[in-house]
Amino acid sequence: MIDTLLLPHYQKWIKPIIERLDLKRNITPNRITTLALSSGIVAGCMLWFKCLIAAFIVLLISGICDVLDGALARQRDLQSSWGCAYDIVGDRIVEVAVILGLYAFSPHTRATLCLFMLASALLCLTSFFVVGMMSQNSGQKSFHYSLGIVERFECFLLFFAMIIFPKYFSVLALVFILLVSLTAVIRMWQFYKIAERY
Image 1 (cartoon, helix red, strand yellow):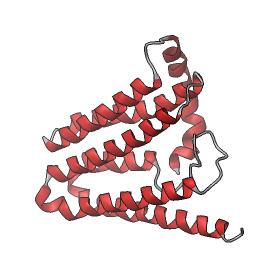
Image 2 (image 1 turned 180 degrees about the vertical axis):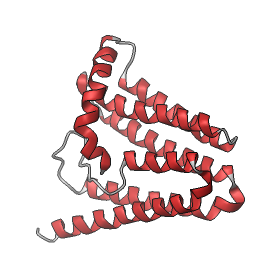
Image 3 (image 1 turned 135 degrees about the vertical axis):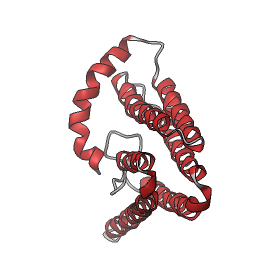
């Protein structure tokens, strides 16, 4: 939701970066996706070892790369089914790695909340793909992209907050669970209202 509002602003910010990357042909969108994926996994490992600052920095790198890969693909007109699938699966692996890292930080106190975080993410992801498969595509993405309360930007904001403020993990985790679950419910309700017209 927030990233949609900020889209015009960060497109201006990343445009010079994309133009420079476009000159370097050895840097491909899929390689940037691989960097986003690997740095996200490393962030989860850093949380496991309670290296919070390192986890924050590496996760930030992952988030930046996640913005750049798609932008570079559009710049070079290299959008592909494989690139789209790789990006989406990579994003989910990063989210799982971070949640597992948050769990490993204090397994005795965080187990239940992390389990519900994963469950809410699964519910939201299922609604995303079901609606995406059954809706006509009209955007820049390779498939119908149904927006929700929690998108990638909001997810990362909550992850960053959980890393920076570990004492407030329980509250932040509950916010995550509530908003992600609500996103799934709203998405399904909106699709139901559209489907009822036909």
